[in-house]
Image (cartoon, one colour):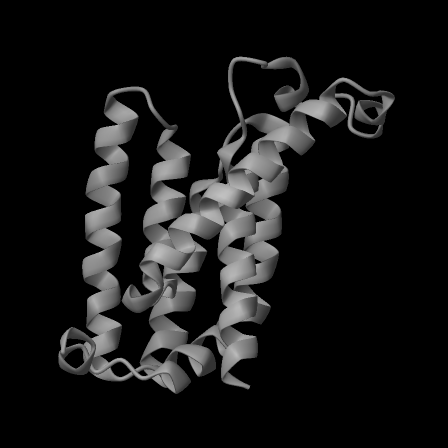
Length: 173
């Protein structure tokens, strides 16, 4: 079985998610906030996420599972840069998705795609509805309110990673 070859153990994934949460949740929040405010995801957020993966991954994951995280990062980075080159997503979105990829167990890939689909629909509808109300006065200088042809994907990307890690940590407890 493929999962046996990858040395994946759900208790390892849950422990990794639990130890990652205190560091990744603030980054996910900051990415969503920054993307809504300025329509950009800071590079340092992506680099910090990668650093968190290295430190927490070395301490909590089996070595083969840790190494497969780098493979997933490179695959998602390649796909993301292609999508950026053809104008489908922004470069920050591609980099964030690549940095988030090692945090997701390969066995959960289909679940995360479904979670992301639901999250992007909810975030898009909520963002567009709020943009048409007076609530935008709470953050009047945010670029995302005015750019109706663009959507701050960091809101969905950060939200999806946060929800996934919380669910992963809870299922292993």
